[in-house]
Every structure is written in C-alpha cells, then in structure tokens.
Image (cartoon, rainbow, N blue to C red; front, side, top):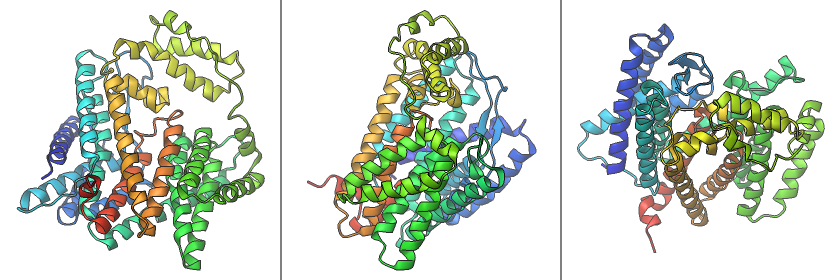
Length: 481
C-alpha cells in the first residue's frame, strides 16, 4: 500500500472512531439513525466501494444539516459553538472504513499513485499539529477540533477512494453522469424555488438550505465550465443540446443566487476557459449568453451586479493595532463603522470588517495558527484569512502548495490529452472552475464547505481515473522526462 495513503486512512479511521464515541452517548435520534444507515453503506462499500461513492454523491445535494457540538454562541475566545454535520460526513467515514477493511482482507492491492499524495499528507500533518496546539492553549475544544479536522480530511480521502476504486471506463462515465444529473436537479429545484417564492429579497439556495446561496454559487462554478466544455466536444446533436440546456439552467441558477463572489468567480472562470481553449470566439459567445440572461433576469439580479464594484476599501489599516486588546465582536463593530463611512456595500463591509478583526489572532499565533475550528467559518467568510487563523502561515503555505500541485497536474494532463477529447474537456472545465473558486474564496470558506469540495475532489479523482485508463499510472507520466 502507498505509505501516505495508508497513513491517511489510519488517521481518518482513528478520528472517526473518536467522533462516534463522543456523540453516541448524547446524540439525538437522527444522528443514531444516520449512523445505522451509514453502517449499511459501509457494508456495501466493503464489497463494492465504487457503489458507496456513488451513493455519497447522490446524497450530497439532498440531505439536511445536523448541528452538534457546543452551544449556539457566536463569539468568544474559546470556540465551543455548534458545528454542522451532514449525512455525507457519516457516509464518507463508513465508506472509508468499509474500504479499509476490504484492503485489509486482500493480499495483492495495487494503488494509483498521484503527485498530490505528498502535499496532502503535509497539509494534514500541519492541521493535526495546529489542532493539538489550539486545544492545548484553549483556543478550541477537543471535540470541535476533531470535527473540523475530520471534515477536511474527508475530501482528501474521497479523492483517494475515487482514484483507487473506479477502475473502468464504465465506472468513470457513471460517476460523471451522476454528478451531471445531480447538478441538473439542483439547478432546476433552484429555478422552481424562484418561481414559487419570488425574488425581491430572496436568494435561491435550491436544496442547500437557508442562507447557503454563496455555497450554491460555488457548486455551480464547478458545474458551469464543465458543461460548457462537454458541449464543445460533443458530436451528436441531442447530446450537445442536452449539455447546452444544462449549462443554461446552471447559469440561470447562479445568477439567481445573488452571490457577487460567484459572479466575479464566474468571470475569472470564463477568462481561464477561453485562454485554455485557445478559441477566441468563445469569449464573445459566452458574453452574449450572459447578456441575454441578464437582460431577462429580475431587476434585483441587475441591481446586485451593479454593486460588485460599488466603492473602495479604506487605505488606512493602522487602526488594527489599536484593536488588539478588544474581542472579535468589538473589533468587527469598530471596523464596520469605519467601512460604512466609505459607502461600501454592507455585505462587503461585513466581510472585510470580520477579516480585519481577527488580525490580532493571526499575529499572535502566526506559525501554526489557533487550530481548526478556532474561528467560525461564517464569521470570517474568507478562505485565506480562515486558513491563516486556523493553521497559520505554515498551513497556509502547505495549502498553496497543494493547490499548485493540483493545477500543475491537471494542466499537464490537459497538454497531453490531444487524443482524448473527454479528458481534455474535463481538464479545461476543472482548471477554469479552480480559478473561479480561488477568487470566490475571498468571500466564502469554499475550500472547506462540503457541498463545494465533495464534487471538486470527486471530479479531480475522475480526471485521474480517465488519465490512468488512457496513459497508465499517473506517477509514471508525471516523472517522465
């Protein structure tokens, strides 16, 4: 077994065991029911891990949130607040356990080695160190630290499970069909939601739940470039029409989210796609489609687009030093007052104020941060600030290294995929989505959110599967002269 993968599985199973032990005694009936259902999925995964993965992807878009761990307090130095735990978290745990036992019963187990193993293990190690230090210094509780750590490790484990369990082209295509059909269902539910509820003061969230419009926007950022790329490579008229329709439905749903971070991310994704495709006509064609959608869009959508660059942020940040002795909430209120005087939109002002308010935390624990879960995700609403607070500069650099290796690997496959149009389309769509998510990350912690990262890592795994089917072992291609 590949050593980094073996270590990751061991860490994950141990953390999962601790979490189950923490919650079993005090868990609500819903939690126990999901645990039982997840156990049956783990039995399925023991015999067919790929079926467990497909069940996970389908459940991702239609299951409710569960809150557990701590009180409902929002602020404070000791993070002991409630944590969202979703059915997919249980499923990933138990699917991984089923897969682990399956590997343990087999004598000859082969694994596809990828260039991401090293940065993933380094990042996991830094998160573990940061969590331990955060617990030791009372920045975060043990239970909350493990919850956040496991939720992050889940995505990496999902990637390894996809790469090593979907071994056939039929399995690859089934996975791609499942993610596309699920995306179509989510987008259509969002449009129906708009027709039923209206839009004046409402952002559609589809099946994602109240207040998750930005998360829905992040998910659609992954799907839109993918559907456009599949449309371009399709030869059959009906298939092209299907992908074009899915593209249009997803684009309309994204506009109705009123997520300006997703709007800007989409613009960056489009620019990236045009650059990678080397087809200059794509830019005016896509802009024409967007203009048509905006023309027929509700007035609040057009108003929301007009506030993206409504004002500028203040240039004097010296006030941060004077706030170092205040609480996060006091600093946020003070920064909010400063930013309001600039005429900045309230949503942007709140995000900037929250980011500025945690700057003393970043300075105090600059190396390894205060631990996963030390600050509320929704409080900061910025992936990069959140990482600096949680895992410090060491973890932040490890995160950037991981992103670089992802981009390098997929771009290399793009350059070598001239004989495989499907792989080329997946690579172009994925790289475009990655750039869009990096921009949207300034307005949401989207590289932590399960409804963004599960399809992200699932699609990345499918790309590696297709590459391994075409080229052979990916590591051998990566190390080739």
